[in-house]
Image (tube, rainbow, N blue to C red; front, side, top):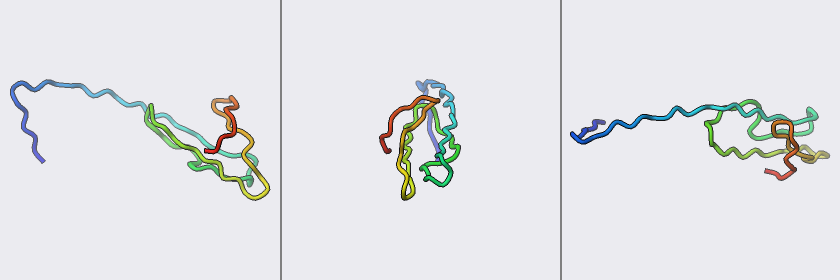
Length: 75
């Protein structure tokens, strides 16, 4: 691929995108899983849908986000 730059082109700087780590887990061990699970990196501003997948006999009680109960909507 080639690009031709005209005489009136301007330089535009790119902003650095900051990655953040989202760590997702479930308790008790054996009560179910989440999707995604574990630690995953996302760029700032990304929207991530997290789903709880309880095993038989368990249900989603609540989500904790930075230590704060944010409800039990799934996803």
